Image (cartoon, rainbow, N blue to C red):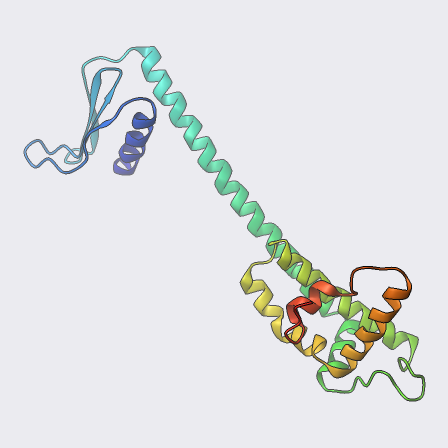
Length: 211
């Protein structure tokens, strides 16, 4: 531990105005590193695992070094904490989206599509079989929109998106779903909407969709 601390101190000293005098093993003196600070030399002796100060350092100089060292430690801890928080949030988002996908109505819609039982538009209605079926399919499509949005904003990593690749492709490459999306495209135009419905998910999961 002291060895690593000494090397970190070396970096601190260089940034404080000191500079490395020796960066390799000194077989004669068993000195692994020598730094100059405020005109004084600080030696790291690996044999005894100790730091040796040659000369004298004022209290102000010593406190300056210690204070800067604590500052660096604080920065490192803050960065590590930010990374940990981001990982935790990503895991929470992933769990919540997966939990939503496992709900009964969403699973029913997905299985209809996965097993090619979704035949939009249905001859009897020219649309969906029932309003309930339309609601189930819409929930599934909007859920996959969320996955695409989390991917685009880099909340989800590639591993997270890969987890959804099968489900997303099965849905957005289904013939019935594509015909429903074409219907929504036309309806969006009549509503003066410039963006396509489910655009992000279509780009991510659709059949080579580059629009």
